[in-house]
Image (cartoon, rainbow, N blue to C red; front, side, top):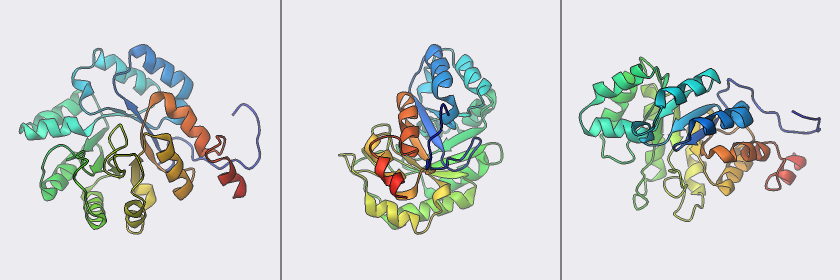
Length: 253
């Protein structure tokens, strides 16, 4: 850091498994990727190319190369996995991962109806070749999944070989873990944490208020995802108690 401040929360260091920040790339240009790496690369643990944006991204190879040179892993959003599966092209999806030399993959069922046993089979198969992140929750705001079902699915997906499970919120933060207003489903989150270890969960939390809520509940080293590139540094200051939202919280500790 640029100077010394006492009583700053201790952050884990890269490569880390807790205090994880997943950045959402929804179509950054090569120049924007370079700028992100230069300004905030130290705080980015992994990048998701949102939903199926990789399908239409120009100079995809070059973009992946830039992230790789910065030692930042990249994976394609789970919607792309679903797009292949619904078209009975799972083997083709595996070839895509191999073609682009990706070491991570996301398995989700937020946009399609997928038997959970079959989802776990996909996780188990992919985990032989890559590190799997599995997403739990629906992208349909009208579909409310009870807490016991979240817990059951998370546990089974971890058992199937997922490295971590992701709590669904979309890039807007208004489904899954959150109400359409963006308010956290507090009871859901707290019940999940009674059964699933916090270090095994990445909470999608694109809105500042959501990030603050999780940091106050779990601490500076909570795993957070779907963070906009221009919010990476602001998030790090929230983690460190250097923004008004968490300023007193960490001083009290």
